[in-house]
Image 1 (tube, rainbow, N blue to C red):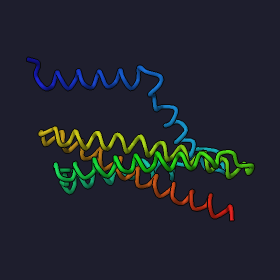
Image 2 (image 1 turned 90 degrees about the horizontal axis):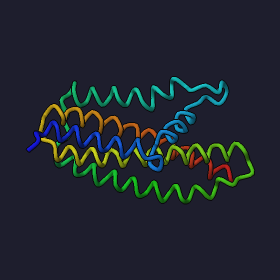
Image 3 (image 1 turned 90 degrees about the vertical axis):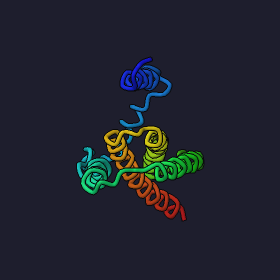
Length: 180
């Protein structure tokens, strides 16, 4: 029988082939579009401040919580997170369908904001799915070191999703309030 390390390597290799080898499920175009959402409208360059707030600070915060404070996700919290992010995934998917109707706007700025909001919804959706999967992994894994790494990943992605949800909420508010 193969030891767990070899099995994990095989699992990650299979996942890598499934995700990166099949053009139908590649999410790199979505990541590229999400980075374009972080562009400054005046300079047309990616905003370092946006990258810091939406990516770097959530990762730093997760490391401080998991490593610095020693808050490792336990089985109970992992179960709750799995449920919460599966729910977030479902709600966002439905909301994206509603927002698609606004893509045919005559106002170019509104059309751009709706498109960027849609991209952010899809990004948050994919990240929610990943967090749900990582939360399940936390339940399965018993190694303290691996749980710590998974906790950093789950916390990081959770904070990124929260930031994206805040941006989506604000933009949705603006989109629908500007129509009145």
